[in-house]
Amino acid sequence: KQEVTQIPAALSVPEGENLVLNCSFTDSAIYNLQWFRQDPGKGLTSLLLIQSSQREQTSGRLNASLDKSSGRSTLYIAASQPGDSATYLCAVFAYSGAGSYQLTFGKGTKLSVIP
Amino acid sequence: ETGVTQTPRHLVMGMTNKKSLKCEQHLGHNAMYWYKQSAKKPLELMFVYNFKEQTENNSVPSRFSPECPNSSHLFLHLHTLQPEDSALYLCASSQGTGVNEQFFGPGTRLTVL
Image 1 (cartoon, one colour):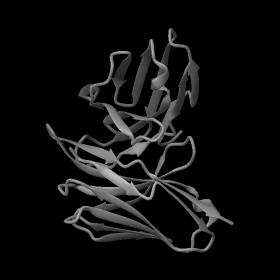
Image 2: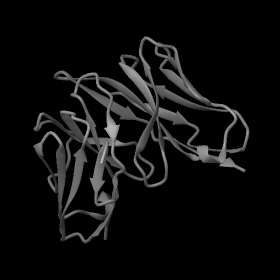
Image 3: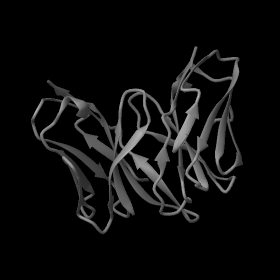
Image 4: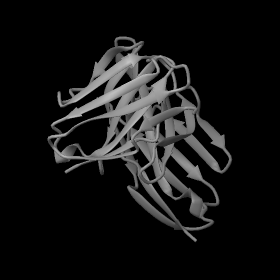
């Protein structure tokens, strides 16, 4: 059974710092990996989606990498801002049988950027 | 309205109440999902519907009863819930249950007293 782990569970940094969030998964037979942002009590906003054949994806100040063979992904946030404060979720998309695919989520990393 | 919408956004109910959560997607998708997000736990997939047919039930207790009358609407009927059922319930949709990105609604925050 696929398991996704995110480290650290919480992170507090001063504004302007660069930071890295980590995600690991136990079964490397994934189709893609996705990073989401979740604000308190709200739904999920997709940030980056990396296909299993890709090594990284970039969007603005965000860069996500994927090492499928080792079961790891990182989300790099450059020049952090208070508006980046949220919970960041990592999820892997894999075949679950009978022609269907499922997302398996980690518990998330709660990021606080201090002004 | 665009994307995936959910109503109500907040719900407080007693253990003997019957209530329903509603999800509507405006993306022309065929597959819809219910997820549960409890404090300090990962999102858990509850149900999957594809073309109105349930294709996945992740061992969810029968006090949760899903209904999918068409590809745009998904309901979660709640009956005789327990306090531990308090959570954020998220709906998502995708073009199909194959290799297609899922789009999430804002969620319903449910509190069971």
